[in-house]
Image (tube, rainbow, N blue to C red):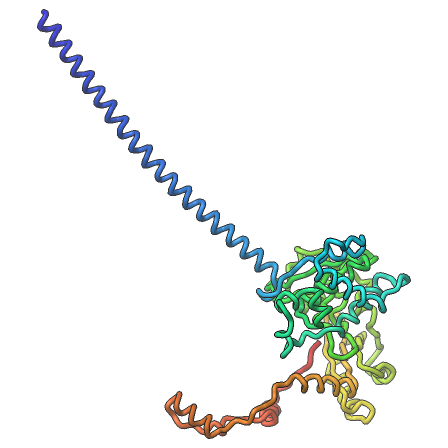
Length: 397
């Protein structure tokens, strides 16, 4: 009996030892699994952090790209300058900002009066702005410090008189804000162009593209002034839902300035009365008039002594099937000459080419002898070739 008890006790001790070992093994395995799980979780957290950082960088890059025009010129909000101007609190502004306001005040001084309506002020600012600076940056940009920024800002526009589209847009916005007219920047869907949306006293919004209306003469164009959405979308692509709807008609420039004629027979008299200076005319016919008839009248005028040397051409702008509106552009001979003189000044002097030397270089590079003179055409020869193939180039606004 005693041996049986000892045997049982021994068996119990052995069993406890085995169970204890099993517990120890299980604990060891659990600990290993926990460590493996923690390692996996840490790796996943690290991957998640990396993904988050990547998404943040992508977001920052997208925000930066969405805040530049053509990936180069920054879109900067200058409403703080207009606020400082109206409050008189300009003490804390930078020297450049103070200079910008001084230039802006000088710009507005001779064209804005207290008795003007918001539309009158907007039109006056637009017209001066469109003839004040140049969008032709040939041989001039290098003289402007921080050119990418200056070409996009009111300071650069007003001081250096050179700008890209966003420079026109930010300057127009600043000037309108200074005279209490609401205005905001619009960017095209591809971020390659920018212009303004303006709210007038009818509480309606209108698109204004000063860059496209700018001119080298003292006469601003108005083809892109106070457009509605439909008119603006005929030339630009933008996210309509991102901006206030431009559906105003009261101050729509084309509607305000379109002359309605009963028939094509009324056009000669209207042109005689209105083609006294460089201008853009909007003519609406009650019925569709083929452009060939309008074109014939304009060509006949240019052949006359009175209009000789000028430019006169038309384009059709039909925003719906019942709208037969012609835009007629006219520049006097004096303005054409002035523009040609500006362009001549900016042209790079032509260097005569030694064709023999050029042929030798061509042969050296391509390993075949070719007389390049056989492939060289003058501008006149190109034009003749186009005429022979019935190609036409049409001027558009």
